[in-house]
Amino acid sequence: MITYLHRGEADYPAELTDYLGEQAPATVALWGARAIWFKRNDNEPLLALFCSAKAPAGIILRVHDLAQGWRAGEVTVISGFHSPAEQECLAVLLRGPGPVIVCPARGLARMRLKREYKEPMAAGRLLLMSPFGEGVRRMTADTALTRNRFVAALADAVLIAHAQPGSKTEQLVQKVLEWGKPVYTLDNAANSNLLALGAKPYTALASSG
Image (cartoon, rainbow, N blue to C red; front, side, top):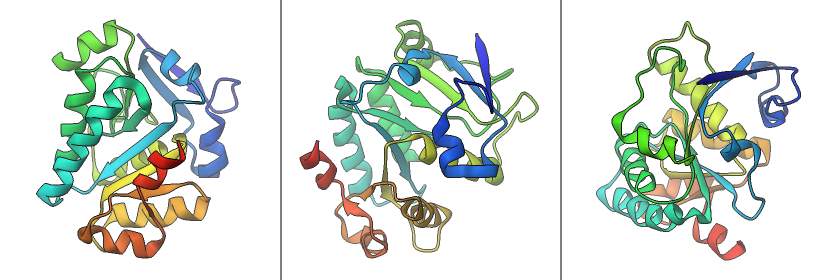
């Protein structure tokens, strides 16, 4: 059952207005285990994952390896899970016991629940969240951009596994750094642009936790 949180209501995520200001969505749609958002454990941070569609094979493999650890619930991952690396991560997470939040770049109304989502949702391990209303029925470049800012605003920290120079994902890194929110990337030569912007190697997050 899809439920909606309206801006100004007590349950509306304060993070959205804090970071997005006037661009915060008027409504947030939820489908699935609401407790994943509302009863989060402070010891299990909410980590946003982003990765450009064109990523080196070594980075995709590293994301897969990290997901093996995340699946046990050491962190809760939130993402659009659209790029190949993100989809690989989601496939691993859905097979584990830990929670995961998927944010489609479209409204949830009339969206068919994927077969691989049904068991995790029934088990209370999956939550779909969207900043779009019923009228947004397909993903576009604009809705993907809005979704990514939504995901980054909700998260405690952001991991950019890879972003090509000049890409919208790299621009998102700059925006999140302006917010003062922790931004991490994988320590790989292909990510020198992100490290130069101020992202920290992801091992820093692991050692601080």
